[in-house]
Image (cartoon, rainbow, N blue to C red):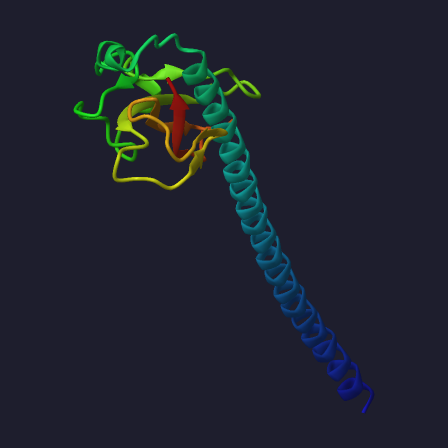
Length: 185
């Protein structure tokens, strides 16, 4: 009987070792799976943060473009076609503008640079759309801090389209935003 008991103890010790190794393997796989989930969550948060950051940079570029438009010396409405001639990021109503979604913003010379924000330079173009107030439109409008009130003479208030692109600080997130702006000439 002593021999049987001795042999059973040896068999049980081997089974316990195999069982403990299987449990250890299962715990290791669970730990790896949870680590992979954490890495995925970190990537999602990073992408979200980059998207928000690039949107803020694009909005800063939009403000810069509005300030540039306000600072342009446009002495009269009849001078607009000479200034917005389809070059240097300034397009007229009849000029074909780049498609904002397929355009190579980073390598183009046909757009303007806004001031850098956090080491990233937003790029933009401005398109003149024409009169903001015509005889058919008698309502008050206010776009981009400029107002054209009822009764304003045709040609005084001019509408512009501003399209801004930025690549974000990581280079992964890109944003394109568009705004309409009215300026009195």
